[in-house]
Image (cartoon, rainbow, N blue to C red; front, side, top):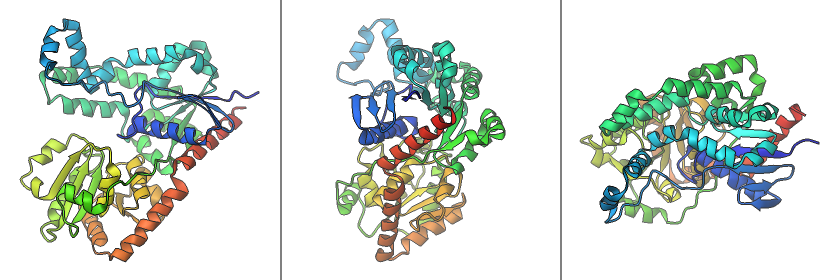
Length: 435
């Protein structure tokens, strides 16, 4: 009899917003819960054919945030030295992540070892997880079917290096950490995990190209066994819009006649925020009613806040929970990535219906000819500017048609129910091949 137990593993907390594997797996968990026949506990769901177990470090519990009250400093000085060191590490997300990786992996795996050992399929979001599974499952590891789905468009260790370099400008401790941390060892461990993988999972075939460029181990695997690269289209919850468009615009300080371009996500070079910022500045030479609204975090925020024209062209709203209200209040969503895996933010915007301009790279190429409300462009500023003006020049009736097309695309392809169906069908395929 085929083993019907499936493990979905995340060595981090689940977050309903924020992107990456934490949000992806949060959405997958919600999706499978919606279609499950039974629920054994909060992390175990019985679907039509399988028992799916989620193992993770909690839900929306951010260890990097420490409550700051009036006695904060006093408490810090009253704590023993080791507690102060612990607090410092917890206040440095990257340092905490890297130094606690071994501890967190071991703790999660050993705490849930009885569940993990009975699962036939192991789904993991990075090579580190598979490496540590092999380390602690020992002989039982080889009997498992390992699925790996990496969510970063860059090699994960390269991305960690860039984040570390960004934090190194903050203080001397982070700078020292950046220079002494053994990133090459981390790369070696991650690649060992990749080498132990049986299948690689991608949201579409177009998303594969980004990893073939940046990771030699994945490229080697693909050249030998392209049939082991599976496609499982993702999904996202329907974004809720609570406020009327004019209410949110009033909060932002804009008139109904203003044309608002929204950017959501990490403000960095990969996401092309610098291209978009400069494009808006250039457009405003002739169109004074165009403004940029952006939400999220990233390394370029402080740089562009210093731009002398920033206050005139850009409204930065930080990290917000009610993102649906802000998308609904804007006129076009720009996603000018230089490289792309598959942005969940694009799917979320489809659910609201806003026209979308994105670059014809990586996973975003999947959307070619899928909806007239999605404008695919090359990664050049002039094309981005032309596309923004094209959307701006549309009549209200034409924008409404685009809005309906995008909503229709979301409903037919990217709902949570469709996400759950795609995932379970992929598991069907994997187990059939290995039966």
